[in-house]
Amino acid sequence: MNTPRTRTPLIVAVVLAFTCPLQAQFGGQGPQVASPEVAADRHVTFRILAPKAESVLLAGSDIPDLGQGAQMKKDSNDVWEVTLGPIDAGAYRYNFNVDGVSVIDPRNPATSESNANTWSLVYVPGSDFMDTRNVPHGAVAKVTYWSTSLGRFRRMHVYTPPGYESGQGTYPVFYLLHGAFDCDDSWTSVGRAGFILDNLIAAGKAKPMVVVMPAGHTGPFTFGRRLPIDEFTKDFVGDIMPHIEKNYRVHTDKARRAIAGLSMGGAQTLSIAIPYPDKFGYVGVFSSGIFGIAGGMGGAPEGPSWEEQQKDILDGTELKKDLKLVWFATGKNDFLVQTSRASVEMLNKYGLDVVYKETDGAHTWTNWRNYLNEFAPQLFR
Image 1 (cartoon, rainbow, N blue to C red):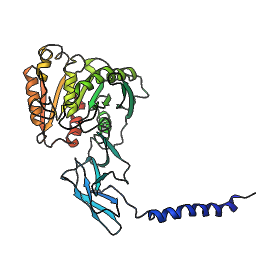
Image 2 (tube, helix red, strand yellow):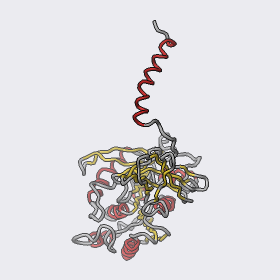
Image 3 (cartoon, rainbow, N blue to C red):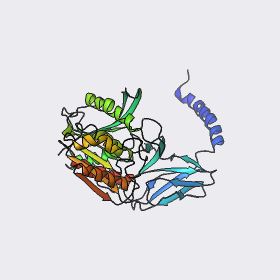
Image 4 (tube, helix red, strand yellow):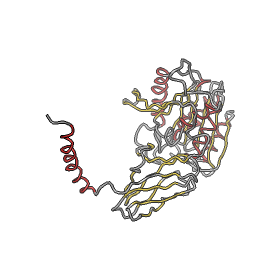
């Protein structure tokens, strides 16, 4: 009988026989690459090993001053590298364009989904409101549900506050919608929603709440095509809300329900909160408004305008009853700022006391994280 001592040389020989051809075929492991590397001074270095590439660009829509991309340089080890910064604290999506092909960072396991894409994700610390801090943390779940209105399974993300799993209480619920180029993952990855809520709740600035982040797209999206808001509304009212109210301990009255969204999600917010005036006591619109009201994204709809369709509700009393807050915020350089202004003016005309603020910045996650941090503490007071 062979002992482990006598079998060891045979095992080593087999492993070497198997791995040596692989190393010869693939050229060994190559140099070790660390990417991204975030320095204490908030400079960030991005690297990728690409021996046969002729050109590599770093791309990312929210990284300040990146524009059409940053050209990376190759060193003697075939590692392409570029350093940016200092970059303001926050989460940023990026990818590499290698000879015309977009790829995520193979050395970075952190990713963020958008609409039909996956990005690599880097976080630059230094923000009290969205850093990962030593406070009690809630949980974010990926939830699959059956949409009867769409006839298929759908996904949403749900944040439950610290202590939810071990407690017995009932919580207010906040529905948080994403934009046209994003998906239900976006608010919790690049948007940092879970960490923002954790920090606000720990500081006593926000009430513990359940936050529901559904998938806003009901089909393929093409920029400039009229958005299928009606399909999403049917799914939201007929399937998403009932699923949450059946499976989570949440309040179901208007005073303890809130809804907000950015860009496309802001338009969806208005197309849900106004036509269903008994459902939401708090309404938030980030970088958005009624699409088409000022020539904004999506163009003017055919037939009666949004205002004409909702005029009876806007003129009535049910919407205003127990409506605690309608809050708009848009960057001064946002391409939808005129849409926001026109929407606020229209709602004010019907006696809605809309809070509106314009901030620095444009149509980016840099603003939307700030808006969430400012809006959430105003809920359920």
